[in-house]
Image (cartoon, rainbow, N blue to C red; front, side, top):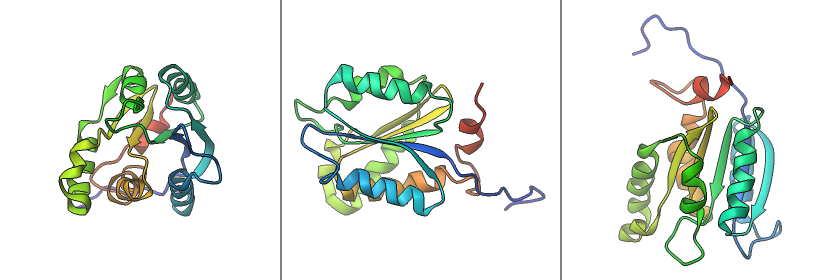
Length: 174
């Protein structure tokens, strides 16, 4: 029920996409490409697209720079959220977040369970906020990126989505 609240207009956000992988290249980065095309199809702007090795310090430095860039509203990170020895996204980026968005990981695993069953327990998808920038971290498969984007992220980055979304929070840079 919208009551007397005026409808919000769409706000085009500046979004960065980071693929975490030791093997992907621009030619083989299907997950990063999916996210780029999906966010642009919604009317958002791709500010930065990067592929980063699954190295704790390298990934942390890259995403820290994106979070500190006041022009960037959101960072979408794909890859490195599993349980192999080279999956370092949680360790790398967790300390950068000022607050966590616990519901993202919970909802992602719920949606993912409907697609891949109990294998979803091996996903450590997570999200948080830092410097008024929202950071969503999801598994590296194109299917997982599609689940995260279509099931959660697209609406949370749309000012028109009710009853709430992150747009007002991430467009109010201090």
